Image (cartoon, rainbow, N blue to C red; front, top):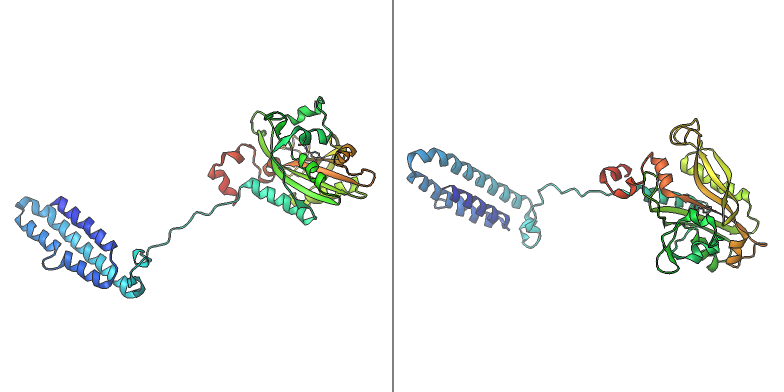
Length: 341
Ligand code: DAH
């Protein structure tokens, strides 16, 4: 009896889902609930059961009968209200009275958000976005940028070597050279992209990270242009109250060179753990394009001058969003990523 009840119930569900019209509802009603229907048969069998089993199955048969009645009534009402469902074909297979399934909305990755914001700010100031290859040659990654083979400054751009002269670029600066080879000044570009260095991974180091490189070359470009553009950029990125300062530094491909600091966005310059009590945060390297770099791409350094800069995107994203471990960007834990929608 138990088997039979289950069998009738599942048969009914199948029949019900295949219904295509109101007249089919009626035939199903007769099949299950009619005078000689399957439910009536069950009641007959119930009468033949031993007395002690009757109270066990009686209520179950009644419950099933009620359920079938309700389902058939619901389905015929549906056909009555929406006659177009009866047309057959595909639409009839959908129960459009069911609540819709909500799709999950994705969110931008925090690095993409910051990368887009940085490039967007430079686009506002007239820069174009260009890209270059991640597999580079020694020439573009080093030599053309005035980083000689046996020079200690190569160590600060520690590099993954591939086959022969090929390597994974350790900065986005080689794209400067590639672009200047093919274009005459005026040049005004930013270059977002991935770079690679064989650093041991920890909270602030990753063997792969993103940089944005910038280059502007034209007649009469001076350090004042560099300071102006980068100060405006910092204020737009971190807010109008931010202060900037330029500290002399050394890069082989610029002369003079400077690092730009912004007043600490965490403590406002008073001194805290993030700025190591200094009140300042270093956010990019910059300088006037070295005449040797211009020479390598056959741009006359007597006629033209330019400035360049390079910044780490993860570092800026960490400061902006208060993230204290770079690895979080690459682990793709949804609980982390969902916060940046
Ligand atoms: N390429 C440098 C680095 O990876 C960053 C940089 C510094 C780029 C100064 C520049 C620049 O264009 O002028 O550390």
